[in-house]
Image (tube, rainbow, N blue to C red; front, side, top):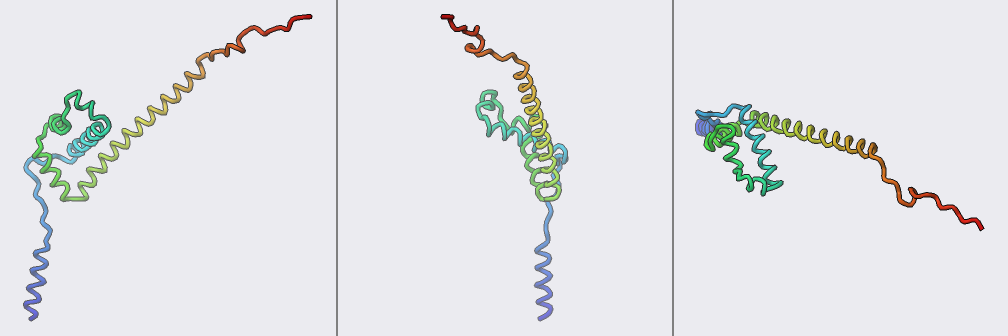
Length: 144
């Protein structure tokens, strides 16, 4: 009885072994994968914001990314699946993408704030147009 129970527990432990995915032959480095996912986020945002711009310029998002980073779709998918099988590493990659995007947002926000300041200064320096009623000569009452 104990032997059967021991064999069942042993079989259960062996069957629950987590199988890790072996790295593909052409694994994309973490830094490059981060750059690819960053570009993918930008292209996706551009696509969601203004589809016409990509169509007018005849840009296919994924083809553009594959060409830019000198990879193919299979290499990207295999590397993505590999990194996804290691949540801690995948999290690091996405954290670096998020940090880059936040830095970009900060640069854009700072530029907008600077432009608003310059616009405010320009408005103050610009001579005000005089009100036509106030700009005219004062009317003197006629003497009787």
